[in-house]
Image 1 (spheres, rainbow, N blue to C red):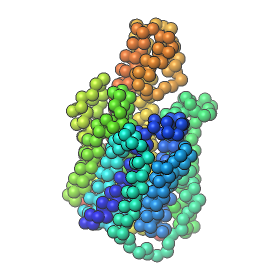
Image 2 (spheres, rainbow, N blue to C red):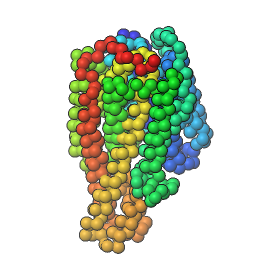
Image 3 (cartoon, rainbow, N blue to C red):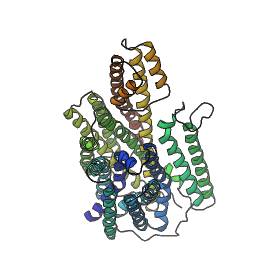
Amino acid sequence: MNLRLLMVLAAAQFLMVLDQAVMNVSISQLVADFDTTVTTIQAIIAFYALVMAGLMLIGGKLGDIYGRKRIFKIGLVVYASGSALTAASWNVASLAFGWSLLEGIGAAMVLPAMVALVAGNFDGKNRAVAYGVLGGMAGVGIAVGPILGGWMTTDFTWRLVFVGEVILAGAIFIGTRWMLEPAPEGRRPKLDVIGGILSALGLAVMVLGVLQASNWGWLRPSNSPVEIFGFSLTPFVIIAGFVLLGLFASWERRREERGEDPLVHLALFKIVPLRSGLSMMLAQNLILMGIFFTIPLYLQVVLGFDALDTGIRMLPTSAGLFFTALAGSALASRFAPKPLVRLGLVIVFVAALLLIGTIEPSLDNTDFLVAMGVLGIGMGLIVSQLGNVAQSAVGDQDRSEAGGLQYTAQQLGSSLGTAILGAILITGLLAAFSGNVENHSAISDQTKSAVQKQLSSGGSFVSSDQVKQSAERAGISPQETEAIVAGYEDAQLQSLKLALLFAALLVIPSFWSARNLPDRVLGEVEEEPAAAT
């Protein structure tokens, strides 16, 4: 096995997932540094997700046209340029251009090429191990990001993280000399520009709608910029995204009928193992990122931990994911992906239930760390299999396209996980808080009416101290304020448990979706009839 190349690819995977976690824990400092608002910084973070989701398919196709190694290297340069600009950014516009746009474009080029390069440089058992390592490193990046970001932001500056990214990208670039890439055979395909525009717009618009749902409201408008027939903008934006994707599929079909090169060969979706692998990648990221959205709220907002302490308490998931992904890769030489993935889903289900039991006013560190570790073990089994499943389902000429589909599915899953569990969390919070206030005998009817009126306009997951301050500013008596705060604290815990329960229930359809995963041991790639003709 080429361990040097594996280290290079693992470092690339770590780099691609690191800085989004860093940005999420540095929001308050970014607001202060650029004299802006939280909403503006959140919009920049959302823009990064839109760029990645919209361009992932194009990035995969560029690898087929110009060579995966070349696109991987160009993507690294673009990504490093964005990191350098981010580190030196002097205002919000330069931050958005460097981080959201340039880094997003670079990541959309690197990631599909990376998974295709794994398939081209490793065979059989070694390929399974390589995909397991990449899956594990993604988990490490997600968990280490908040720790690194919290430490750097608190003791130094968040800018140093991006300086480090430039250095790491340079080291990875040097390491590309160990990559092998077979010479392309046959005619070089052409880029489908119109298909690229339709897919980018469709995916970006759909992800925009999902990401803004918690702000605009899923159906009932809260902060929606416009109201259509009394509904928020969210469903109309999501529907517009689906319409654009429908036009994209129709356009691709027409190009194939005319014998022209499509952006994505629609025949790929007829390959059952690939289709099942993509659906599982979406489900895996939906569940994991949904939980990773919920747990920090409990640790930081309810318990008052800082970013560093929060990251440390999430490390068991990262460690469990990484080491189980390695073990899962070894198990892949003896067991088929289907039972391993399903076992992983069962373990994730158990972990989510264990986490529900740890959501209390004070943290039991032992029970919580065990539950987080179990979550990592379950996710590690899943991620160790899916990359190999997807790439083993296609021939060499379709690997970059499959890679683009892989990361598109993962990006959609991440966005959906955050949005859906966020919506459930807020809905549960408002409902539980409303009920607690209404049923509390120490709160007067006048105060109940005022609270209900405030809740009718929506709300967010804030600390109990903020609720107390709001009640005091409104002139509510100390006794009633104490009752309101107690009701809110109880509602916080109920809503967190509800969100985690929903994450656990998502395992059930995911278990069913895994039915079409390969039930044979994957050896060296068994070529499918090529989708590209």
